[in-house]
Structures are given as C-alpha cells and as structure tokens.
Amino acid sequence: MKIFFEILFWFLIFLVFYTYLGYGIFLWLLLKFRKRRTSQFSASYQPDVTLVIPAYNEMGCLAEKVHNSLALDYPPEHLQILFVTEGSTDGSTEWLQQQYGSHPRISVMGGSERRGKIEAINQAMHWVHTPLVIYTDANTNLNPDAVANIVRHFADPQVGAVSGEKRIQTFENEAAAGAGEGLYWKYESFLKKLDTELYSVVGAAGELFAIRTELYEHVEKDTLLDDFMISLRIATRGYRVVYDPEAYALERPSFSIGDEQKRKVRIAAGGFQSIARLPHLLNIFRYGWLSFQYISHRMMRWAVAPFALPLVFILNVLLVLLSEGWLYPVLLIAQIAFYAAALLGYWLENKKLRVKALFVPYYFSFMNWCAILGYFRYRNGLASGIWEKVRRAE
Image (cartoon, rainbow, N blue to C red; front, side, top):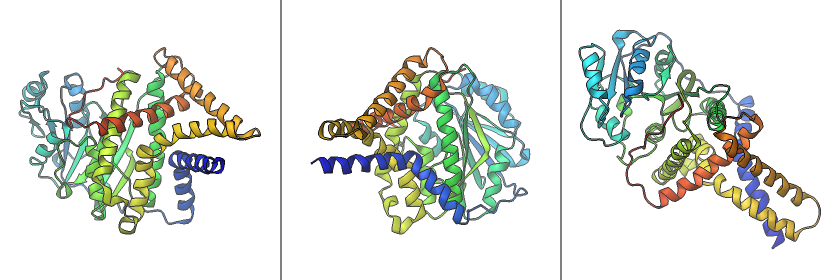
C-alpha cells in the first residue's frame, strides 16, 4: 500500500508541475531545436474590418471606448465599428444613437431583451459584411496599432483567427487580486507566444481577437467561453490561431477578490463545458499538435491539476505516517508553509499591503480553488450563458 501511495504521490506532483511549469519548459526546449512557425504577414494588407463591441450597460466607459476606437491607426475607410447594446437599461443605446447615429463608421445594434453576450454576437454577425471581424470588450482600450497588427496575419491563408494580448493595468498600491491577475496574464502571454510558434494558440483572448468572417459558426446560446469555442472550432477545421502581443487590450483588474472569484468560477465552469463539447480534440492522431496543446495548456489546467493538489496533500500526510526519514515530513512542511502564505495573502488582499512574495502562492491557490468550484457549478447545471457583470478597479 505504501508503494502505491508513493507512486501516486509522485505522479500527481509530476502532473501539477507539468501543467504549470513543465509544459512551458518543454515548449521552450522543443523550439530550440524545431523550426518556429510564423504567419506570412504583410503590413500592407488592409482589408475591410468590422470592430464588434458588445456593450451591455457600459455607459460609464462608452465615451472613452468610442474615442479609442475612432483613434485606431487603420485606414478609416476600411474600419467599421459596431456596438451591440442589446438589453441595456442604462441609456447606452440612446446615447450612442444620439451622439453617433449619423456617423458614417459607427453602427448600433440595440434591442430590448438581454440574451447574453454570445447571442448578441450571433445576431451581430448577420450585420457584418467585411471579410474580417475583430471582437473587443467595451471596458478595454486598444493600443493604436492593434487593428493593423492583427489584420496583417490574415495575409497568410492558413491563419483563421488571431488573438491579441490581454494586459492588466495595475498600480504600485494595487491589492493582491490585481497584482496576482497581472502576473498570471504575463505568464499566459509567454505560453501563448510559445504555442503560436509551435503550431496554434488554444483559445483566444475575449478582450481582443479576430477571425475570418466566413469561418464563423453559430455558437450555442448557453456557451460561457465564446472566445474559446469560436477560435478552437476554427482551429479544428485546419486553420491556425496565432497570437500577436503587439496588439493588446488594456484592462483594469477586478475590483475585489470576490468579483475576481465570480469571474474565475464562471470561466472554470465554461472550461468544463468546453471539454464536454470538444471531445474530438482529445484525438491526437487526428489533430496532432493541436490536441497536444489543448490537453497540456487547457484541459490539464481546468480538469487535472486543481484536483491533484488536495490529493497530493492528503497523500503526503499518509506517507509521513507510513514512512521513516526526513523527505516526506519536509515536503509536508513545505506544503503547509505554501498554503499558509496563500492564506496570509488572502488576509492582506483588501488591505492593499504589497508583499510580492505572497502573490504567487495566493493567486495559484485561488485559481485552483476557483477551478474546483467551477466544476461543481458545471455539474449542478448552468442556467444560461448570460454573464454577471464583474466590477473593475477604477
């Protein structure tokens, strides 16, 4: 029995290590010896583009978003802007129509019923007649070259979608929730860069991504991760999804850890929903590198590592009781210290006390706890694909 516990213990540690660090290390080493993929982009490639902006009750940031969108460095005659304000009750639709109703580049798709972001996108795609469409959130600002940097990749016919980068704007006195979120996205950006150089990104950033309009497929109305499903379905058709960090959406972190937890739990629930809807992607003989990347970067992070961590702790306790020597007691002490640091980070989170050493254990534990909660939320049933708005720091 002891041998079985030891084998399982070290196997689970390997799975956790591979999920969060090993996969990145493996890709980095592999790309040292393998030719890196790049899209054959062209800076002179400037087709017509529609910028689709879902904006449910976003009156507080609409003026800034309009200004940011009109200031993008892309030929104005080739860029249309479509705001989708379906179901808004804060005057967003009326304000946009009053201020920009006669603007040649801005359109507004309203509606009295709130059906959720993905249904809004499904309806908006009937209005899009340009060869490319870019999706971005109303509460983000794009860098001036974002559209040009994304569009250039579509000069390569093998590219079906392009993901920009999500950047979290944090300040020196930011709470741990915001600082941890920022560190997490920096690491994610590093992995996405490796992913695209190997073959394809597995999932686009909903804050900023683009697709060929002709490749859009109607997405089920209860879908939680619309960006993930849209981009992955394009990838399963043989197109690459590439990542360009030079096109980025700047966003403030969640207002509090409670707001961030709501967002993370829903994303995790959407992850399990996506796994259930993409079972064919597990067939590595059919999809090759795409399956490998999907399993390593997404599936293991949602469905393996979060559940392995508590088992590692329990097995460690059992091995301390069943074994002699110093190894397992030291490992148990290390785990206790790690989770104690995470709890201390949680306690300090809203006090805005910056202790950088606590960011990693705190956010790592928080992420995995949200994944477990997301699983049970998925198992208990999802009422709809309508997101509950999460407050952002100001």
